[in-house]
Image 1 (cartoon, rainbow, N blue to C red):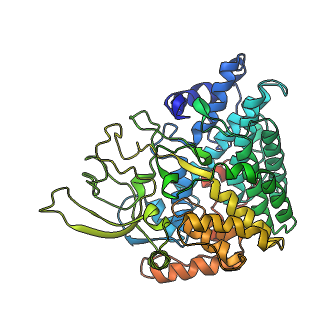
Image 2 (tube, rainbow, N blue to C red):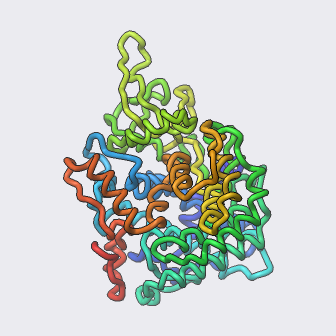
Image 3 (cartoon, helix red, strand yellow):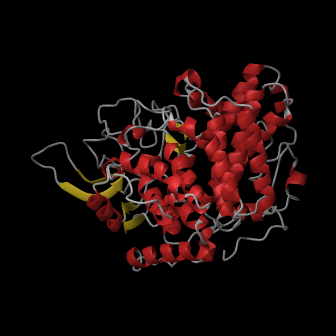
Length: 506
């Protein structure tokens, strides 16, 4: 997608052409008095509308992107991988999420909720204003992105409203929170439609746009999520295995030979199946994620050998679990140095500089202090992977193990381990092996929190509580409970209706 400069025009496009609705205080956006129907008359317009849906995953006119708000602040930040070494006055939402003190008034939570419903609204506009049988690729992309938005909503917030067509204000306030099973039915239907009407992978100018491999990979992940907490639908493991078995050969052709090679600008869109696309150049299309590595003063870069001189940071002093570092060092795991740095020099002057020891996630920080295209803390070029090769390999292996086929799973687990430099397993993999590999493989990518939740309520709370007790017993936080397995419904959403109950415990 970078060849298209995708987000360089989508901030305007999605804000004006596709989101051409009246202003409303509802996050489930209505479209009364909408003139968008006049926009879908030509293929180029439908194509632009489809691209506009993707734009909500990027900056989209805001300071932060979806990866930062959702996968870092609301997911990785709440897991057992990161801890707060020191607090600042920056990003109070990040502190509250990490310390399990988040409230329904959180701006971050509201932003996540609104982004996902904005994607749904734009997808609905495209689907309702085109006919089945025409513009099928764009309809399939819209279906995928609507399914993806609902998937993140249901696993982050639980039951939510289902909207499949443009609606007016008076109808929006009457929407109820639908059962999760009904939401998953829509997600599955949309993904099956997308998979049937997309090419496997798009390359060249279309690299980065979703194909049928991504649709099926997400469908498999959906089934794996349904099989776990809170749905606990054990039959979904067989469905996941079936979906993954149908694409695993094609996914293997996109398997990156080295772990370090997965996270370079040169190889972007080469191994991923679905990524958020970013580019630098002060066009509001860069990634904000590197700005949340650790805290710093508001002027001057703490990483002078890695970043341009006016790089600043926005987050707390977030560091990686020390025990995880020790485990990976002991195993000589190649993923460690790719994902994490143990510190940095605070000056380029070798006569004055000092080494600052901090275990921080630098996987998405482009370390090039000569890159003049990077203009600000939220203008970094690295794409953020939502689905990549290891997702399919490890989820497929997990499904096989759950279905009593551990011997068949060994090949896929060993591929991941061998790439990491830790060698093949001496015996068939167990579920515990899957847990370890997913923890090491996806550091900084926002998978861990949702893995813990789907693996079970009791174990998730115990794991998160043990971590919080160890690192945050003196930070005025609280230990996680069942309530922390979901985000709160934003308070501004509850204010507009009287037929929604808040999530448990908030």
